[in-house]
Image 1 (cartoon, rainbow, N blue to C red):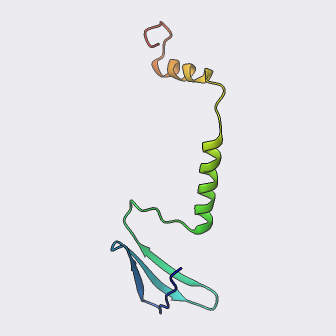
Image 2 (cartoon, rainbow, N blue to C red):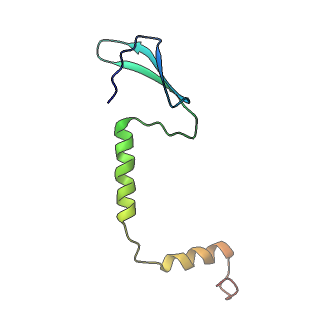
Image 3 (cartoon, one colour):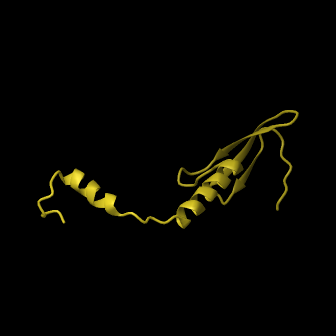
Length: 85
């Protein structure tokens, strides 16, 4: 882990396209600003952990009942005359 000391209004640059700014420093909190391309997701760690947890659960889940797929297709086309099968 790289540990850096920064003062208010200073920043660090990551990979030429991400800049992390120190906005404010108070007794027990540091406010930071992150300037990054919109294509790079930026999350608080606890949110990132929840996303990873949900992704793992979704990858492990299994679908056993496919009967609803035909019903969805029928609702979309509006008919069951055999042409859309």
